[in-house]
Length: 79
Image (cartoon, rainbow, N blue to C red):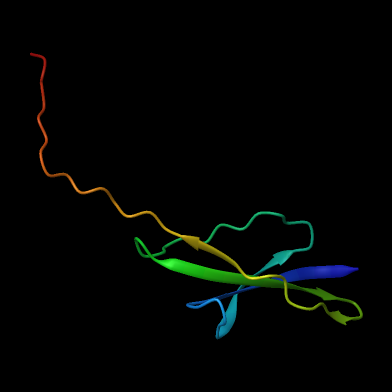
């Protein structure tokens, strides 16, 4: 039975990876915050259990959005 999960992240799909955080065993969602705009992040997870650690999960990745650039902005104000 797992007791917690260890979340690792890296800058490339092949690593290197470092420990980012741990979660309780029943957590199914993790939110990484304070990421740079337009950057790609790679994650993998393993379980820690009473009889040792599991193998690593598949690597998952995500890319943050870029903040839109305003070039022309017209405002209509009601008086």
